[in-house]
Length: 432
Image (cartoon, rainbow, N blue to C red; front, side, top):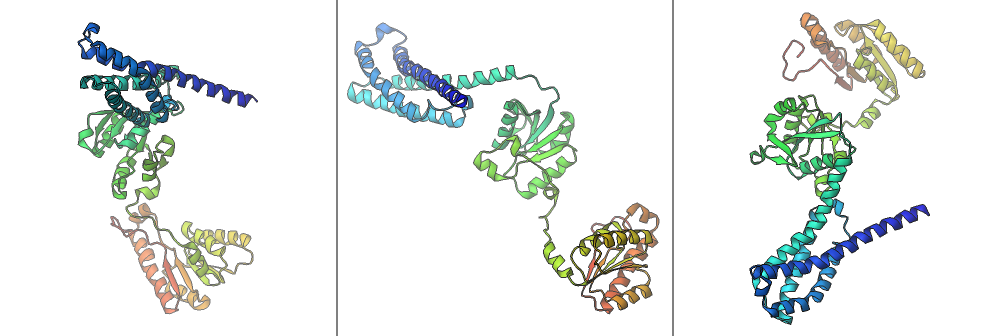
């Protein structure tokens, strides 16, 4: 019952607002043309021909009814004006155009023709007075909310990249929302025509080349990227620059928010690793990989290491015929052996100690166990250590890999998978 009472109270409240606006409009639509007639004749009532005054008075009731009907049809009495935007402005313009055309045509056909300046001045006065009361209500509520809202103490300073409609919506959402502890301090945009100008009081400080300098100058904590129409390549370039600032990065997911108008701070998403890639992310079909392992004899070299041990865990969980762990370090090999035996007691597990540089050992293992799949993860991977011992890196990563691959080929292994001999892209040291 209380809920119904509240709803009734809200309805009555808006009915009062609608009634007040209607009464205001009755006076405004007529006073605007009365004032226009007065202006047309040099602000002298005595200079106005009596026929114009009589005609205007006879036309007032007709025009009043038409205006109220048009305004109602255009939803000027149903809108919530505290949230007024371009849509409401467009409706006021349409309502004004319709009523002005009616005024000019009807008064001319039904009574007599008035001076053209009368219609122009009257239309302008009516438009600004009808629009003014509605948007002044929105402005008053905005000022009151800002006065009541306590000042935010620990604001996070935000840089917005993109001075288009999306960026503007983000800025307005931050400025109007009480719950958001952000403050937009600067805007970045590549369009030189927008530089050194302002959007809602926030300066556009320059293009993407100014991101680093602006982040330091304004002590930026967060960067919001609001350019949904940018290409993937453009976004990556900007994201890579922003990433160097160490600020928290967020961006709009895409064009959908721009089309639907759903652009708010909550619609921003954190920048992921995929956004920084210079290519589309690769999605591995793990189901096919694990199906291939099922029922096969699988050997993992370097099986006790960080990468090798994880490979062993994944392989053991997908029912191989046999899992062979081959590692030179007994502690690591023993640790993963105990773990797998405890978790998979029925697993056919073989753990061998040996070096991939030992050809005889490698060949004996392949000859005895006949592995069908080999995952070669036996490689030194710590760059600083290997820079001090380059010969060991070559013997293990290069020669050891060659000997293992050769043994796999001779023993007709079905698949040899090289996990790592470290990176070979733009090598800058002995590891590459």
